Image (cartoon, rainbow, N blue to C red):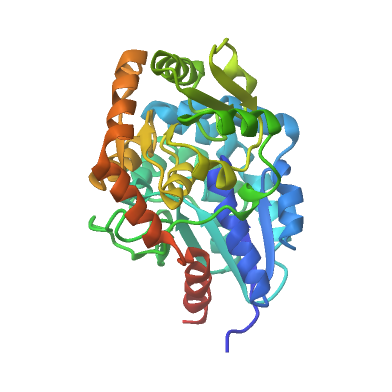
Length: 395
């Protein structure tokens, strides 16, 4: 029998980075464990519905600054600056929030990669087990780059944080910058096999369903438009600010040239600043779990949450990826022959329209999408993730 745990979850980022932690927390709570979630202030209501103890990591103003800087993550040079601004500069405060949740016995820390420094320090200072969740395959595959980033470019920042917490300096090759334990991968093994040279074990558990992403009704304006259209196309860049209005403008123009309905959904008004004749625009939340099965094609940025939802619905995908994990995610979709991918230089209406036609007209892609949707039915990655957390702690 597994002893009750006190689980502290820490994740920041877009909804695709946070919602898997909420689902893990919900399941762990149902299994009899205490669960604390540390993340952005805006997830408090969802966390409370999951019966999780909620600790906000930021203020509304800090979150706006976090979102506004997300474009930095699209480029290698920008990653270090983003981490300095939004992780290392606040490391002592983040550590204190984590320590606040670690008062109970049998505590285990669970975090995502890259923004894990405060959790690493808490684990070291308080002698607690730490487990990682990798949200996408390239996160695990680039572990050496991550280690180089923190060992070389960010070492002085980390040493200052360590000194503030009474810890010694980091030395080259320090095990505290590595991954001494097993990790969970939030994708099916068949989506991307873990074949890279890793000094730690990554166990793929499958895609996560964002149950809160199915809450509420589809806005009436969108539902009416979908009902009247023979070929509704969903266009979304996810919940972050990784892409600007160019993504939406080019995709909308491609839909207009084919005389099909484009449904543009964004979370930030800067992304939908133009006029899109023949399309429907919506700023804010839409339950993709309900909308996705009603569309014929989805054009998106390559985020794991969106692509997993589209795969579950059996919908072909056109990925317009830029930076970070998204080009790699798109490459895996292409290998499965359920998607096409266009890099930024090809974000031109005519090129996008041609790719849309190929996807919509291909019997092979349609059949592949249906096959994989069937394969995803009755899978439960969250349950497997919980079992791994319990097993590693008890081992």
